[in-house]
Image (cartoon, rainbow, N blue to C red):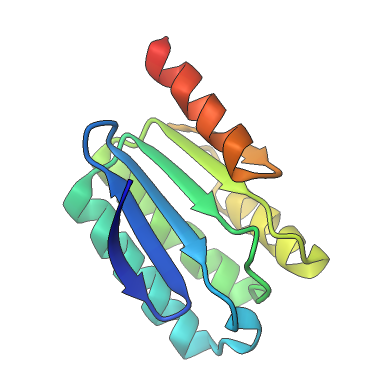
Amino acid sequence: MKPLKQIQFMSVFFDEQRRLLMHHWLDGNENINEHELKEIISQETLIIKEYAPMYFIADDLNRKCAFTIEIQSWIASVVAEACITIGLKSLAIIVPEELIANLSTEQTVDEAGQLPFEVKYFGNKNEALTWIKNLEKA
């Protein structure tokens, strides 16, 4: 998987052969403000639209910042729209270790409502990658 871009507090990777996009939160993200968070997610949605992955791993294990209710709704809207537009098949979410960040992740996905792609939660990257590999074989 090759590094695509480093956005403030996030690295984004892409495996062109597998059409697999993955992001990973970097250290120091606990005090991100709303403006920074919207900028990060906006840049990521542009990457989603440009590379049109079939599979997406959101590695949020190291994400410490929690999403407010307003941000949850906004993220659900813009990320879901990008993923639906490009025909994403599956989204694996590696849940944050931090409890409040973890809850805000689940609430963000719930806010997106019924999605035309499968979403599953995992505790680590290996579990998520195994799931994606099994989907590729099917």
